[in-house]
Image 1 (spheres, helix red, strand yellow):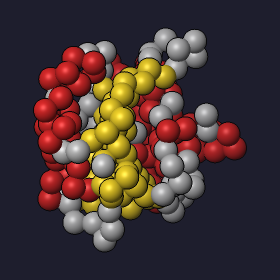
Image 2: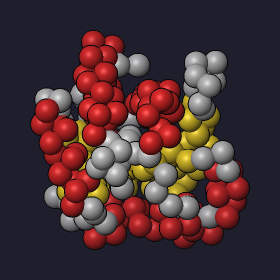
Image 3: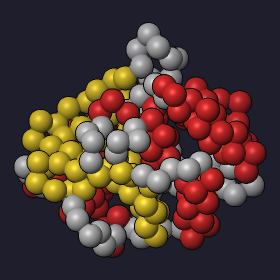
Image 4: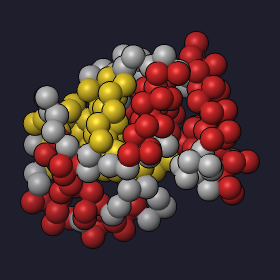
Length: 195
């Protein structure tokens, strides 16, 4: 998953374990399962990325943004996060890990001003598709993709968002399940193309 950058992934995990709870990035119950539930969970999405500009909305602790930047140095990750202390963490961590393929923007998704549209946008545990799609569709170029990490009820969310999907001209909407046979924590992804 991380290839020759495995040590960078381990360093990020160690940093998050050491400072994440104190900074309010992760809860205390997450520490024992940080690698399996969070790092691997995010890393499984890396093969879905195209080489290009990928936005991570509500990046928080850097899940999945920093993990994807580590796994995919050929992609430029734009981490979009509204909270100042989380922005400070993301900037510091990207610098400490030597991730020159990361830009951090302090903004809410719907207020973010980008110099060019994104090729893809991702998010993890941000909000329901009915709110997430309208908030992020304006960030993505025509022909770009939404690649959202979602929970076990993603299919129900997709049904509830069918009118939103149609209104915002998304095509090829699908749910992918990643990690079967590889990890006990499956990764579910909503993916769609902006037409």
